[in-house]
Length: 184
Image (cartoon, rainbow, N blue to C red):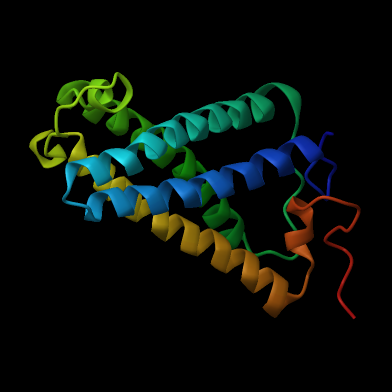
């Protein structure tokens, strides 16, 4: 269940991939909702988007608690330059900051606009224009920063897998493979 010096444990791997799945669903539903004009269609998408945001918050809190109280991350790969190690740390910290910021701004929009009541209490009112509420700006910026972070994170994983061929990607997958195994 816990991580070793070279591989993430089952709990960390599960939290990572569940978070990835829900973040992609959240991003898709968020951009879809942002592109819709018709209130009923937008409300339908947001009624899935908001619970997905809560799920991401809970998964992120679980990850933070796991790393603070229960487990240690594997060592950085041997031979990685210092700038890559620092970049990876920065990207991971920024993921947490952006996730918490997105949750806060999403909750702010729901509360200030009254959309939570419309979405979840069966109100027949049309949704408000979210651009009328200040939390919409950081929410939109956060979504775009999240895309950038995902591109950097996935790009680094693909670089390690296909260019360096160091098996690093197997550290965050289920099973026994570890980074020292090189593909043949």
